[in-house]
Length: 191
Image (tube, rainbow, N blue to C red; front, top):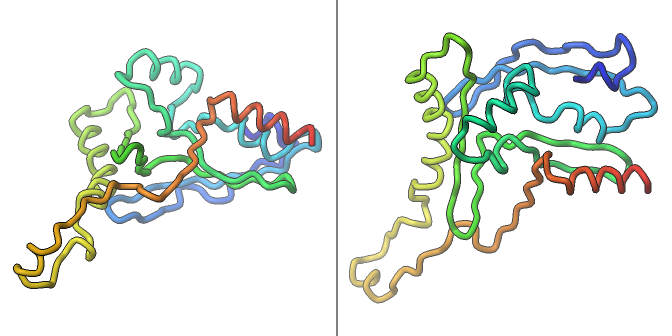
């Protein structure tokens, strides 16, 4: 993907299969760098990489068609990106994987696994459950504010008012397939 917009010979794998440790799983990551040709910018680099092959599979066009035809629900925010575009032309983004979406007081967790021709469906299902488990636990586990140290008599005097998850918080999620991203990119190129 990067070779289409980078200077010839500048695309290099600077870290292959690097291990990232998470609370319940290990993830391998490849780090790739390349120097953009002068007619391209950070937004071009972002757009040429979407969708990330780790989310769709390869070859991308076929894999995306397969996903759209076979998955029961749209991925929506899952596998998109969230990030920052600087007025200086810089950009810093990350995939929305292992992420909780809170909307209208309801938390949504999505997870996926890499399917290959020899995948074992029950093992892949267990993998997705493992990937989602830390987030689900974070949502349902009682925190310190949910424990009471007062006497039973005191607790009957003050009824606990339920708090909706996400109240007072705002998160902007931008899906890379949304036309807003392309419109924003075009605007930034013109300014």
